[in-house]
Amino acid sequence: MPDTVTDNVTKQEYAIVEMINTLKNMLVERINTELVQHEINEHASILEGELGLDSIMLVEFISLLEDNFNLTFGENDLTMDVFTNLRTLAEFLVKKNLATA
Image (cartoon, rainbow, N blue to C red; front, side):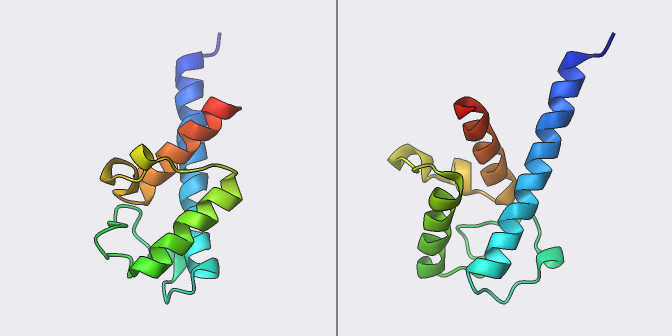
């Protein structure tokens, strides 16, 4: 008998890793940063400048996320809890996607 809890955790972690890769690709390909995808640390702070995003790039990134994932960030979503780093953002997006699926 399969362990559904373990299977669900594995699927969720896989979705998070895939989302992190998607976010890295978006940063490199669409935000015009000088980042190299394989060099981006998923734990680097998004809001504190570790990824080299200025305020305009950050707004572009948020807009791109909203368009790409068909969601709207509410005022309560634009926090350090969500935008701490790419991993926390990916976890938020995967959770949002699961909630609407």
